[in-house]
Length: 238
Image 1 (cartoon, one colour):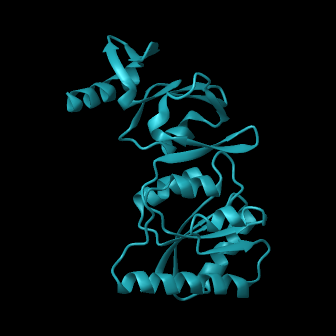
Image 2: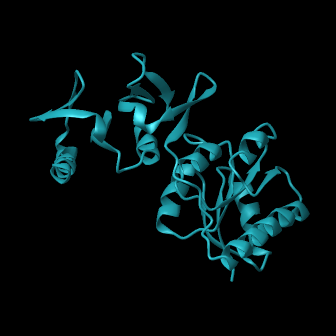
Image 3: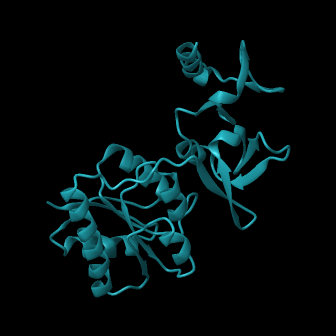
């Protein structure tokens, strides 16, 4: 029995060191390596992973945001150059927090913690999971802002930024992120893309007329590329 591992770091040398360290421990099995959280999101959807070695400071989506986005989270060992995130990280129930450069001895100690937890879960036949979250965080003016999925009505892409429109405020929340990254963060059963510039909350739809979706008093265009998917959702709900 081995722990199936994924290594995630945007620094090639750091990723190579992780891969080398993992290969030295007989109870670890490296399943894959990723250089971004977005790539890791796709990987964990397709593969069964027990443990992720995860960097924090990465482009588009940070390691902490990645953890918060997962509905079913493997064990996490954070490997970062910054000590300042430790308090928040342990609040997310990570197994351990390694500060670069960490010794191999310290790496082994963290992995032994993961091995003990893995055996405990296997003994009781309980998957290492996190409860499904109903929120996520975005960066806004050097701060992390919590947004409930249920508050979102629609999102508008503006080049490198996204305007998040919420039901409890007339002022949109603006964050720097590609639409594709946001689309990955959102639960597919609650949100869908209707245009290259718009993602909508399915629950917020008040009416659909020809090539237009009405979200309250707002009219949003439906692209031909997304129209069939939207109509399939409407038919299932009718």
